[in-house]
Length: 252
Image (cartoon, rainbow, N blue to C red; front, side):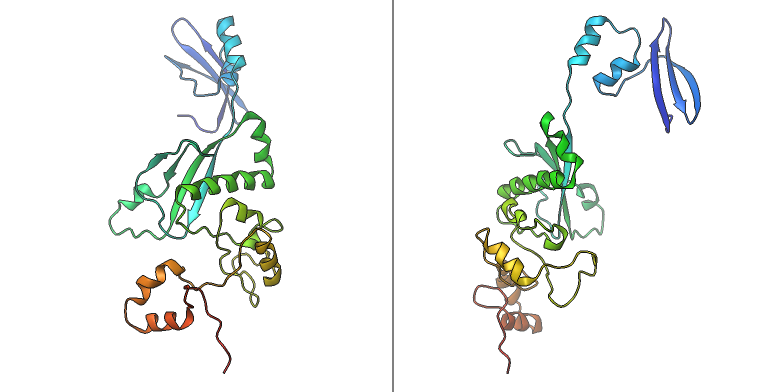
């Protein structure tokens, strides 16, 4: 294998195939018994000499569309039932569990889950990948469909990283803004300030949702947590309301 080279011509002969390529500023030619063209047809027809006219014309008519990959990263395991999972009827055709192989390694403890969603686009949608707004919209659509497959999961997205249109994420299916602090900056992304809590509340409600403060553990997991006696269970019960969200403590 010759890396760092650019093929400029492939010429089939009687006994071999001559491959001409650029390596740096030098033009070189190598002979091979056979050549496999792993390139799109519209490129292949320009590189390979001597193609029959009908084959050349047919290859010219072939059209290609992007097949983008959207990686959904979760802070906990959400799906481990299969490596490559076919999902007809969604914005993505299938998704793979990215850490599937290392899950089988001895001593591996899974903390996160990455689902790589393969997302075909229509030809006229190609330009959406050329700007951040279009790319985020594609990702939001994939996230929305993914959540429909597993509606019980919680989807978190920090609003400061998606400003100024972070409220559109609610339409994509998220239900958690993560930790938003009125007192401290985002230490991971200090250049991205948090939105004001009142603004966050207003924009959340404008999409038909209620902004509520939760504990570090989601309400649906509280029952299992407090069933184990101890200091953690006592502190969590004191901090949670009847629905499992954070209670407002009254000053003494």
